[in-house]
Image (tube, rainbow, N blue to C red; front, side, top):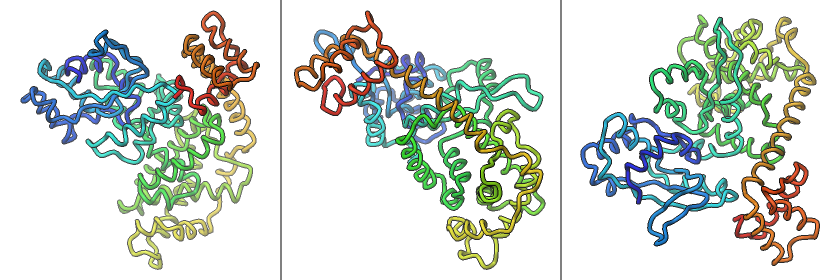
Length: 467
């Protein structure tokens, strides 16, 4: 059990960092569940413990008092379920000036070493959650792919454009509600600065990425299935690709992703401006038009590609692509609404691969001006190779840092356990001995990679320090 006053204070101090393991961030007080929480806090604080489901929390380690009745400290505390409860308490305290003296929250605390936390936290969140509806996409939010994209989106600035004098971020919302949550504790002045750097029209969600990627991968029929079904297909693709080579998701990949986002959103505006557009089926027209463009480039100009870096640098779509997409979009509309379509309902027809087959067969050609602005795949590959190389170097540094963060005492216990089980060669003993000497000795990058491999093998063998 944790006092509401303390929980609110912790949230006010650490903010969304406390919810990084959550499948979503605070969903604001607009939801019915959050309104109920606020009402209880203001009108029946003494009943909060009885009415509220409580929170599920993880920590890497905790320190108890001598009687093991009070928690004195916790390392890497994460609220994996109950973010809305926590933020509602903090909001009521800050905005409503509510007294939380009578509020207590039940808390399920799981102490997990960092090696197992990544795999277990999503499941704890999945099975513990029974409040606001959780979408399938929310449970994939802690995958390293999304964590990496989030890091890129906060660090990489997009070039200024349209006469602006400042650079901006494309804000990647890894956890649902994150964009709003980031602003909740800001002063009006700081919020204005935040919005200047992170404009609302440059927010990208997980389902947006799935839509962009699967469209450009020429799967418009799957995009047309809806955001959640499309996301499941995208998640399976990413998990497989990540398992094969996580370094392929580098900074250049992120810039390319933003370029495709600009392609997509520019096409949405383009379709809406056409004289033939009658305010219907825009989502289907857009995904099919862009998939058709991707297919045309693949078939008519093999070895060539859209210049993603040009789109990123200018943060806008070149005129030749706008003209090309306008020609494609009207033809796509014709296929979607054709009288001989296999399904009477247009949106149901768009979900069929037969619809995509018919769009692919449209006798459209790339404009000369479009072809003239394409770049070779080989030139793009050079940038990707360099970015991939940099990603590998970054990963090496991250491994080295993680080994040092584990500390010499922990490595000593791992070494002793492994030796008692006769699981180490003399060479491997010498590597772990270096780790056990931290901070007096720090493993080199090469040593760190070997130590990491040994660690993973010992984790599989059931080392208690690693499981």
